[in-house]
Length: 259
Image (cartoon, rainbow, N blue to C red):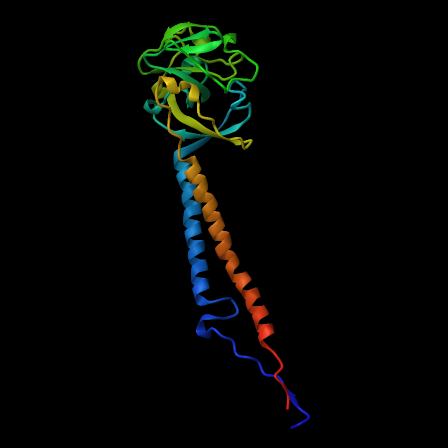
């Protein structure tokens, strides 16, 4: 009739692949992203739990590298993997404690170590640069007579040389303050609380040989973060597609005109 008007809804394009919550392909991809994200996220955590152990350092003997009360992650290793410059976790009953101790390895079996020459630690006749020591202090605060480290043992010092009960405090022991490699259970990779990050590379020991390779902590963190991003992104697809579909439905409904 002439006085009547009608409204027609334009057909949606896209065939069977479109709908209020997005295309089927999009839904499948979002589901795949969530599944892959969960694998990466949970796999990263599982890998980290197998490889690393958390420790709380109770004293300031490793300051400023590690402060009192700091939480660290240490990679589980065999004592044979330890190299000069490593910050390690070990237990030695002769040090009057059964608790894990955290110190820096400055000499290994066969090395000759002493302090100080021109204010620097000397290993095998070479002066070692130690930028990790507290700023404005001198290594000569801790005088160490020449010690030859027996094979299979380690000589360890704290970075806070003045207040650290380390190998230099046990020089009168039968082992001249050294600790067996087998006593080492882990190597510290990072300070995670506060979030100071990875320990700096002890480059001063490079002149004596290769340093330890970093553990897989960075790779593990990348897996965890990537997994979280995929899970969140894939999970957000449905609500976003639904909202976009609702907007398209409203714009598609247009008046055709009156007859």
